[in-house]
Image: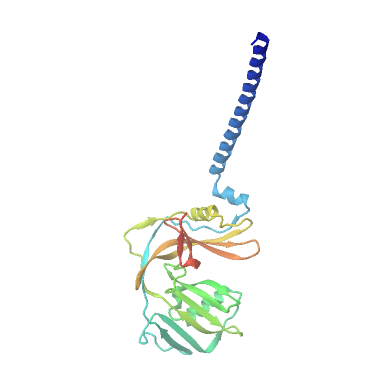
Length: 273
């Protein structure tokens, strides 16, 4: 090979390696920038991410640091404990369900005011003070209440439930009731709870919080952890209520100790994070 050919070959190699170096450097720079972007995204707060998706957070979160597990025994109703009440006829099913029929239906003052339903329950339902309103179904003409302990609701437990029914004239004619007769929060171990912000973050990470929605309320209650024959143990649980852009209301529940999402509509199946 002549010197001229060798010089041409060297020049070609130099050009090729130069192009390769430029390519590799540009690839390195791109990868570095991508890594920086990932790091920046990882450092963004949940508030910033909610703001980016226009998810408004209007509620006043409940800052609770510690809470105990609670347990309860299913109430067994007996005719002896049910003292006669004017205008009500009692029936007991499977020993644990009380059904009361109002011989003369009682009118509800205002269906648009939730206190109307609570006032009826406090006045007319057996031990009605121990229940709090959860949902009003105007189309189905019924309102659902959950039994409470320490002013906290027990979510979606068939043994801690009160449902009242009204007719076309907005008069309550019947209610169905179950309850726990003993609710004990004397567990020796008190759990450190995940903050309510963490419950919101868990829902956001699972893409359950839709853009342009509003978190209207966060509250603490209980969900069933262990269910035995007559005794059940309940775990502290965050309830996050969300109003969608079209006005639809959705409720989500997160175990406040383990951070698991609870799907009550799937037989209380818990979904791992």
